[in-house]
Length: 209
Image (cartoon, rainbow, N blue to C red; front, side, top):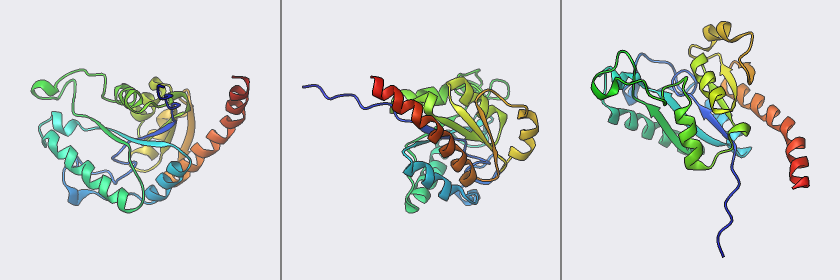
């Protein structure tokens, strides 16, 4: 008897620099990594609510030759360990090493993974069987939110990193934009409230199935 496929799960896609960790100019060293306040508590709330956590980050420093692609993996392994020690699991780490204008060699390409394109989100959704309409994109830039919108997700801005400045260019809202929050913890609560509003409709549809 064949195994029944698992139902698609909702995810929260997370930008890295300025949303999870302090913004640094082309961060490339573990010593530069600083978790932002409220990040761990926010991720715990989301994970306990059943969301898959996926990091999606543009890393054009690779394209510009500032650091090798392998160094992005070093940073992500460090962060994965830091989160694991705090009881948080990131299911996937996606990054785009390209830049269409300032990239060097094979990294100079107009790709479909660099946000605001949705490629990283779509790839993760395929690999992890994610339910994009029930998923959310969280970041500190309009490009993050546009990537989420193009993937079919709702979006939340955090005012950390570039968020406070970017907010002025987002309002009035982008389609699917839920609002702006001062921290990832507040953003997580906003996402959970939106998901709770979805529940009656989803339960009704399941009853009809």
